[in-house]
Length: 461
Image 1 (cartoon, rainbow, N blue to C red):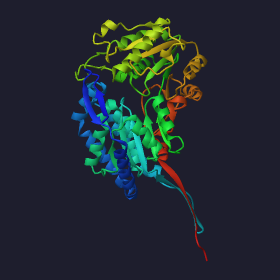
Image 2: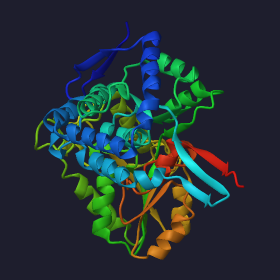
Image 3: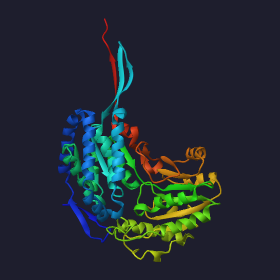
Image 4: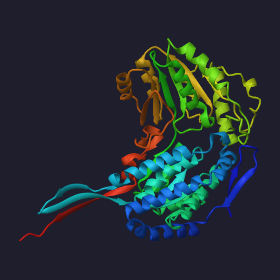
């Protein structure tokens, strides 16, 4: 029997483990979901919406259990209180737009014809969720999928193995039928086998580029629609008219919060030469105020990375960059908890360039590179010099300039004077190796349903 384990970044112990389902047992889970789907979809939309919201409310009641569990599983300090703000915001927003997003598009309703395009649930939706924001990323698909009439099976990352279990328990206790929303523990081979068998009518995956490729290979020839949010190397560009203090505060938070383990975290920053020195100086001071330590301590503001192998990647990229001429500006002596394991001090590198892996590959840790630029053209060229494209953060007082530059950036979202935020009213999407499809907003509902056209010619005398 294969056991799926969560190794806690706090102390390296096995925090939780669950047996992976064998293929035949997993097929039975899918069969139950498929059998339950038609009756779930026939329920009134408002009933489905309210049951989802009750599930969200029930999970909120578990805050005292959820927050320390997250610290043990992936290292986020308890002082930040979990993910309930974003979890609730996203759930509540999609609930408010569900009726309009799923309403048929009426082309004609006359004495002669009734023509319309309806939205119909795919069927069984499979959500493969990541560990970095395990509740918020999962709810992006779970809430609208259930509201739209799909049944949902969730498989969570081994690092946050308890999250899917916790979500399903909350929703079931709130009244969502057990076969409508199920949690499952699977190894990679069984996951791929289920997808290859066309077990699911839609698969949503958030994770690494290689993980996305594995999903695509498994789905090849099945015509199963996929939603993939993969890697990122999100840039920030600070223009000469930017609010310097605001830019430092937001971009440094975007680069280091959650130990830099954010899908849309800031990983590289380009600063106009007139502000460069001040920006760097203020940024070093900003990150030096972190307290790195045990995430169960309420004084800790920066916890360990989720796993020591993730930390090793960050250290290797920094070491490689420094060997190639980069300078590390944050004094490691300020962070005595930094070790050879999962605890990693924040770091800022200058004298970096795009020949370094640190500026090209996803770091996904509390480290960021800063480069000086002369103008918009140079910044634009550097921002687009990436195989990823999730978000870009522009800092200026000129909205027209930001929109003009934004139109040229190869990215899914353009921010002006903010970063590292997901607006549930806007489609969350990426380009290039960051992925395909999109979640949330009206478009998220469209991706979780399929169009069905009705062309009804009325019998006339």
